[in-house]
Image: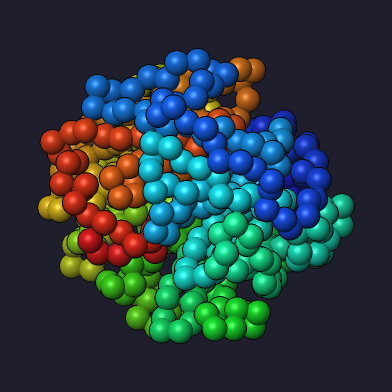
Length: 460
């Protein structure tokens, strides 16, 4: 999702959300785990203010954990997810939370860290947790505020003690970090930083911004993290009047490939040398795509799904007024080293005019020999779809709530499959756990992952 609050009027035209373009950021909190007791669960999902959920016959809603203090303020939106062992990590504009998911039907809060900043997209690697900060703050630590605009970038935490995460260090990056992608390389963790820009009058986001930034984090000395490269990955001008830079990059280290969604373009990269990515192909589709938002490889690395976040996440684009090729997914086959577009996928369930809905964050469901994906669509809910036939993708399951009261920004921000269950981070509702019981996806239950950061794909 594009946050307009701190990228200026340029991106406010994309979001069209009064709350996002006018609201002040959340007040700064202290870096301490929230005093919270484990959530009580009877095995049935807790009620929500929107009423009963709707699902396809093959999808079951097995758990729901609402946001709780200190991460339940009006602007404390839940964001991205990461997984490690029996834990799920949930980003939030107010900080981040760690859940024990050893029993997926009864998730329990382990700790919550108050560390306000927009995005707070999260990844985990070993004992390290990294947050994306896409909002100028007065300083790098969690007690900073948004009144002065001096710093934005990455924050790094030690999560060896899940009950008491500790702030370690931070790295300032141009235009902050909207999202980031981990590329492990021996004892060094490289992080590709994606951010929108420029903002000409800003101290933290100067023009030009035709680049990505690569941060090096020594895993044995994370306090020494630093920027090591700023590659310009655009052989041609970006085809967007909205912003430059990239929104999201997905790396597939085993294939030595990465796919970058860069607002006006899609870019296929060779990452054989992780600090010197080489452009293999640059894609442009000004007819169907407004914001190249994210990318997902299939397991064999022979396809890429690019999504278009038409309207920046704040508009109702899943209605009869919006073509099926806009605010959707485009499926590309990789043929002789070049991507060729085959088809589009958009949820078939029409949404109401007050429901923000567009293609957003998703991941593969690890079905050997098939290409199946689960994906969030904001108030369009969670969709499970099959793109094995690239030219004719189809939905096979869904989960959806009624419209959120007041027509506010709401819905599923990220929906990922992890060890037999689907986890959805809902902007306002909290954490949902879903189970799909379908002959097509049942083989995925035999695939076990030790950890999962969706932007760093691994072959299963």
